[in-house]
Amino acid sequence: MSQVRQLLRPLGDIPETFRADLDQAVTPEIEAQVTAFVNKALKPTTRAIYLVGCGGSLFMFGAMRFLLERSPIPVVAMNADEFMLRGPAALGPDSVVIAASTNGGTPETARAVRFARAAGAPVLLVTKDPESLVAKEAADIVLHRSVEAKQVLQGYIAYALLKAQGVDSDHDAAVAVFRDCGAAFESAVHELDDRLRAIAEACVDEPCVYVLGSGPLEGAAQTFAACYLQEMQLKHAVATGSGEFLHGAFEVIDGGVPVIVLLGEDATRPMGERAIRFLERYNERNHIIDGATLSLPGVPKELRATVGAFVMASAVTARLAQHFESYSGRPLTERRYMWRVEY
Image (cartoon, rainbow, N blue to C red; front, top):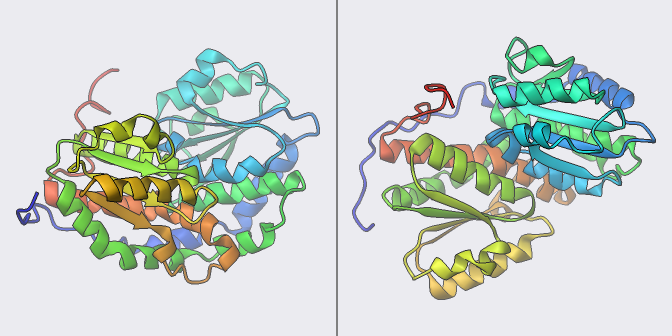
């Protein structure tokens, strides 16, 4: 759309507690909690690690799951209801379950936690509310204060699991960054803010938006499309892996399709770059958000890909959603069905 859009809602400020929430994501107390759980749960006979949640909590396992690909133990991410209904054969005392529910009100995740514990599996719940519906089903709970802090906490849990398996070459450096990462997350929002505003202005009136990501950012693409655009903005959106985009979805490209590409610095970056080369040749509505442009203060070069993925999957997508809210006038807190009707 070439017309200039007017803001229909004021753009929200970065919360005053933004940095404090992040810098409290990994404290000595939390480290002790996670270490105690991992030492208790992980055994030489452990056959599988399950990451269980719904919606955004499932998608936001993306960066954590990517880290855990170093694990000799297979790691599987599953929707909470599907996890319970399918009943994986490896579930039991020789498995580990990491469950997530941001505010703790997801009934499916509560049932899945109860199901996993009944099967004898050790379960660690990541949530904000220790008194929530899901928390009441859990014995081991670790708390976070924001979606950004949740990403940092899940990163720390991944490193704790890797360390316990002896595959932790960058554990100490990563944990040092996680303990003091507020500046990296906050600077990313400021550095990309004009870019994010322009993307929202360009896409807010489009009938459908495509969102691409690869590796640790495939989950971020799903979060932005399904949670922020579909759920919160009632807007048609499609998320696809940057590699899979070239095996079907790219056929809808006609020169004017709005496409947002989340590009990281991880090993899968060439997939994103390949998709971008195609889009630059055949499409005019391409919006690239490149993690390589971020300064990420305090983050050593060897950890940029890891930390950058957590930043892109939380702070950056959340801020982009705020810009969509400002142009659409639809609050991110409103829903049509969720929390309103039985489903």
